[in-house]
Length: 90
Image (cartoon, rainbow, N blue to C red; front, side, top):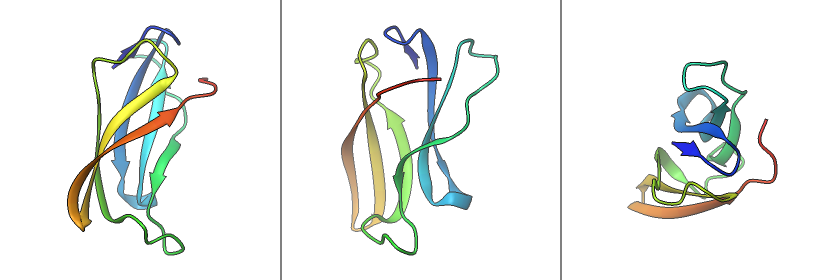
């Protein structure tokens, strides 16, 4: 998704090794991508989000510092609309 406020490309995905939905950004869609920034995690210390997967961005709000995305869970099986307020983008 291209964000016009930050003039950057965003990608959100599940990093299975970190049990987290992460955000990465880049100036060009084929360019160098930033390090992963965790949006939501489900670690051994935080079982609030059991069976975390998904991370699909809401495409119609791409001109602000607020990122909306869907987060899916296995336990309980459901889809949630999540919001992340971005303070700074590399």
